[in-house]
Length: 234
Image (tube, one colour):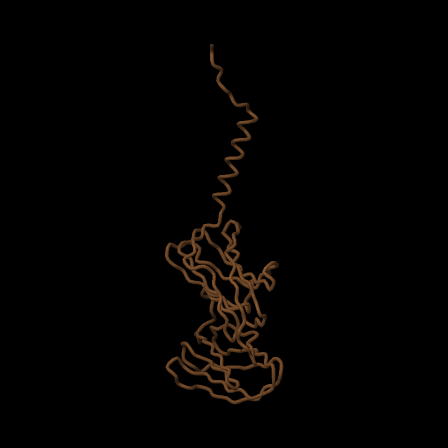
């Protein structure tokens, strides 16, 4: 008996080809990022610090930081530009300042240069600190002349704040009365040397420190550190 050979129809061949093409496109367009350290969060007086690092990146354009207060609905709160192409470990940081909720859920939306997106695992930060004051916004931590901080105080009182060099030299030390609500602090670095400075703010037993940098020219390229103060910026 002669055995008949199965000959797939043109319709079947076309269907198989389209399926394989879709699989290939899906594999090709996946976000090609390998994480060395997964997303994690820690509470500070100023807000929640998020950290993560990649071991390898290929055509990685940016990370969109998303936050949720119920673990279900997420909103974009900022972005950090990515290294793009890297085979070395690359650390990233993002400070979510002014957050005062008991729980905050975070995730990363990683976006490739072709627009493909993928999501990281979720990091949860539980609030434990009781704050009499909280930094709500601030100007760029790299400044030519002046640095400004807007602080929300829960009660009236007296604060002490200092501007010091990293060697510990006191440049400015002020005692100032504040009222409930938003208060602004200004630091003039126009006549200071280029370098890194520390700002300390104290109210009673509560104290917060910030690190800023005096530069000679306007910063054109920022490091991979961001806060929601420059959310969705370039």
